[in-house]
Amino acid sequence: MNLDYLYHPYVSTRNTIFAKKGMVATSQPLAAQAGLEALQKGGNAIDAAIAAAAALTVVEPASNGIGSDAFAMVWTGGKLHGLNASGPAPQSISIEAVKKQGYEKMPAYGVVPITVPGAPAAWAALSEKFGRLPLTDVLQPAIRYAEEGYPLSPVLGKYWERAFRRFQTIFKEEMFRPWFDTFAPDGTVPAIGEVWKSPGHAAALKEIAETKAESFYRGPLAEKISAFIRKWGGFLSREDLEAYHPEWVEPISTSYRGYEVWEMPPNGQGLVALMALNIARGFEFREKDCVDTYHKQIEAMKLAFTDGKAFITDAGEMKADIAHLLSEGYAANRRRLIGDLALDPEPYELPKSGTVYLAAADGEGNMVSYIQSNYMGFGSGIVVPGTGIALQNRGHDFSLDETHVNALKAGKKTYHTIIPGFLTKDGEAVGPFGVMDGYMQPQGHFQVIMNTIDFHLHPQQALDAPRWQWTEGKKVLVEPHFPNHLVQGLIRKGHDVQVAADTGGFGRGQIIWRNPDTGVLMGGTESRADGMVAAW
Image 1 (cartoon, rainbow, N blue to C red):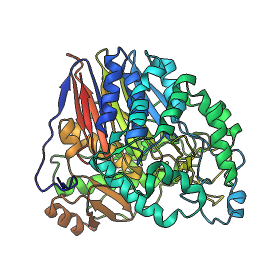
Image 2 (image 1 turned 180 degrees about the vertical axis):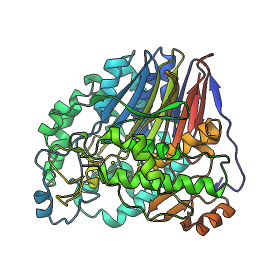
Image 3 (image 1 turned 180 degrees about the horizontal axis):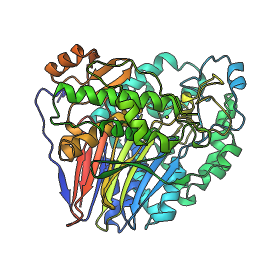
Image 4 (image 1 turned 60 degrees about the horizontal axis):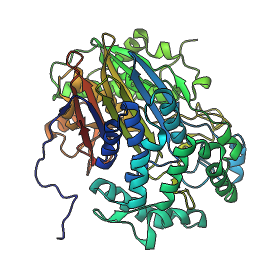
């Protein structure tokens, strides 16, 4: 049959999924099943999250890979723990060194924008601290998918083909040949429903599992990574990999209408979502789908985001105080600027910030909010030959302007877009949530939380609701199915509203909430992706 798997002429409805013993929500069904497999082997939510994350490097490589960064929040034993597994810039890099290679700004592709990848270290750290199963068991589904192959799902196939068409025109240097060898064997990409396998990827995952990621940072895989980057004039070295360890950090939060909304602290951009919620907290929203509600939401977000981009960087180098940015004084000052017409925002003056997201939960009350990313789709376009290790391009967010808050500096972590979220109430876990996709992420968090708390939408509704995205100045993108009468009303308020051709840039999210009285789990998954909630 000649079928178009991306053609959807009819409205499709998903229900919220309920379960008791465990739940894993991801953007790719096979990854969700990998997490469920870990639970059914006797693992906990942490094991399930690691299994799903490792599987996603295989079954959704257009968004992440073994060479990704990662962040996680883990609820266990009545406490929320944060893990920052983003990596710093190499010790040998500098603004001068990059400019000597002919760049006026940080490139998006190639060996230069690669910082230390943190995802394998995240898997090992989570497993060591909270996991129940050996890492060799937890990574087995991912290894199996890579060895035996799997058929491409529709949204994955769409983005894989799109990346291939682009890379054919821009990747002319020999350093990019391993990408084509790995992801476009025989000169073409696999189509939707066709089987793709990656033996090198399987071998690398086995080595990571057997050494608890030591090989990736201090062993044979580390040598392969550093040697290939060195060959092509990059900066990441064996010493950079050897020195790396992920950081356990305290999540930050704000109170929003009786709930605590949690995000990771900088260098992540979760602070933007919290600042926007604080600004919105001062308004009363009587109705969801009305012009006034969307106008105030957009204005709150643009003010918070403008400030986030001005202040967020490596936590050790931030000039702004996080407590001040989360204070009611800051929120009130910004809120007073919101009137009837769209603002063209300026940064607040200080007194004298491609991805996969998954959520996992078990029947014991453990819950995980986890995100990992190669940043821009397949990342840097650099794949270490014979390993399937696709490396991120997170260094692209550094500036070569020495006065910029995110100025490139050896050993520094840049502003990071990927952010997991978590919700609690009265000291009890409500659950993990997240919306991936670059600078859409804090905007997605903001909208999903307001959908849940202000407008009482269940998890699937909260994700399905039409989304908007502020881009710059007065420009706002809305999804194709965003109601036209609301578009017209926002235009009358001065917003430069543009209707997008598809839903691809508006994030892909997952939610799992837990009923504290019954322990029943309820999950929603992204209708904009190949998402699935696997439940037990």
